[in-house]
Length: 375
Image (cartoon, helix red, strand yellow):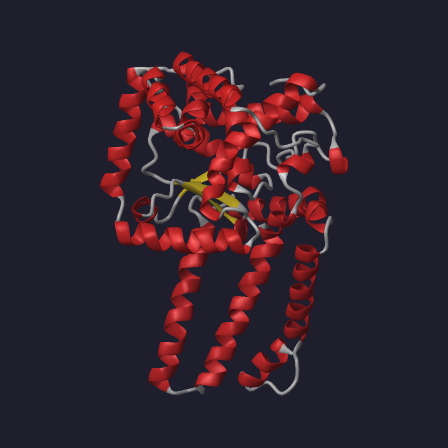
C-alpha cells in the first residue's frame, strides 16, 4: 500500500516492475529483521557473497565510494525539491513521492548490503559464551592485571608503517579463523566470518575534518562494503581502530563486539606496537568501568598504576581531539547515532562501546575453562 501511494503521488497509475521489486525487497528485509535465526543466516551465508561483490567493485577506486554516494544522496534529497519549487514542473505530492521512493531504495540497499548484520545473534550466543557476574574483588584483580599488561606493552616510538600494521592485524584475524574451529550455528567458535578479501582495502574518510569535529575516527561504509579511517587518526590509535572497523567489514555490527575483536586481535599480535594499541584502545572504557564499579578511591589507584608515559599520551590524545572537535556537530552526531543504534536493537546505544569490558571478562572465563585455544 505504501508503494502504491508513492507511485500515485508520482503520477504513476500502475505499479511498474521497479516498484514490485522494491516491495519484494522491503518485505524480505522485514522478514530477515524479525524472524529469529534469519539474521545469523544472513551474516554467515549471504553477507560474505554480497560483501565480496561490493568490495571488489569499490576496491577499484582509490577514494571512499560510499562517502561520495552518501554526500550526493543528501545533496539530491535537499536540492531536488528546491529545483522543482523553482521550476514548478511537478506538484509537491509528486516530488515528495519520488524522494520517499528513493529513500526506500537506500533503506533496502543499506540492510541488504550490510545492515542485516544487526539482526544476527549476539556474541554470547555465537560463541556459546555466558555473561558472567564477578565480585568487586575479582573485577579489581582483572582491572589491575589489565593495567600491568598495558604498561608492559608500552612502546615509546610509533613506527610509521601502516602497511605493516594492517598486515599484522589481518594475520591475527586469520589466526582466529584457523585456530578455533567451527562452533555454534555451524559458524566459527569466535563468532566471526573469515575474510572474503585476502587483504581488505582501507580508505581515508572523504570528509575527515568534519568527522573529527564529531569525534569519529573510523566508519563502516555499508553501501559499497568498504571501511574508512579518519585522516587525523594518530599512529598509535591506528592498529586498534583499523581492527575495529575490519570487524565491521567481516560482519560484526555491534560496537562493543567490534571493540572486543579489536582487543583480541591486537593483543594477540606478535607486533608489540599493535599489542599496545589493542590495550590502549579500551583504556577509557576500563577506566569508566573501574570508577562505576569500584568507586573514586580505586579509580585513583587505577590511574596511578598506569605508567606516566601512557597517561601523558592519553592527555595528549584528549587535547588533540578536543582541539578538532566542534561541540554542536559532536552533539548532533551523537544524538542521531544513538538513535540509529537503538533503532537497530543495539542495547545502550552509543554506550554499547563500553560493553567490551564485560565481553572480555566472559571471554577470559571461557578460555580458562573451555577447549578454545588462547590466541
